[in-house]
Image: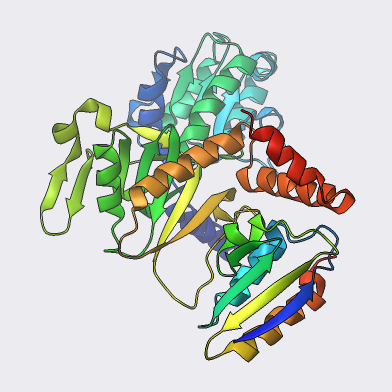
Length: 346
Length: 88
């Protein structure tokens, strides 16, 4: 029974790793060498090991012998506590503790606060190709800094078929069926002085709780396909002011073919929202029909969004005024006529 | 062509939400639908027009419908007024 269970859990573990993102210890080290003052102590040949989770572990209990819920596949941080515990052990106890610890497939060990790891730990790690990194930074600060980096690496991410344009500082994500004219609208907006972030393929990353950041793929370089022309190099054509690398996604504009039976928004009292990676952002469904200038409408959407960010909700304010006017009329039907005369003097 | 006088019975009068309801229903018909109040004449399919009537609670508006589906349109709009625009 035991071997089967072991095999099964190993298999599930393997599958979950295949589906998730990962980073190698090599890129962890290269990306943070300067910022985290990391130095490699041993096991260069273990740098291709991967981590699959952005979480850290302080293996104090595992070193003390309790490995029941040991999250060995995370980055293992050895701070003052762990090192002074190991230093206090007899040689025999140390070997026993380290050997048990090293039975697990640990991806990497980081020693903080310029601590010196016991020689036996380095030997065991070298045997098992487990890289040990060392930093002078204190544990708490180090976990904050590293957590920040890992959060970016493992942030929820998704690619969306659409165009992302910065319109008056508002990131508008255009979506809709292929060929409906997303790229043409983006091109028109760039022509009017707005900035293209990505066309066709937008990579959206969730930062913090409720912020979506959109960007293009690294190698797409602000290229755009326009039906009938082919590829258009927006950066070359419009210069640096016509593009930007990334932008917070603030509104989604979904383009649809005009459908007579569909009911479209007429007032805008209720804000429609859509869900991207668990974040709700305002959504506008725009029917396309001949003679409609979607570019100008997009600018209007952006400005309306800015107004609502500043606390002014057009439809609600208007409705408030209307209701007030009707209430006054209820009291005195003549009041309106007089106010009209007063206004006539201006 | 048919005409009928309707009473605005909901709490706040013909504000944005009831107006949107009215326009949505009016828009389904081919007939020309007009609303008259205090010397104003507006198209019932135009939201701004309907809101500009500022028909307060307790006031009356005159509905004028002209077209092939006028009686259907009148019935549905009448029902909307009677049901107080489904408010409250």
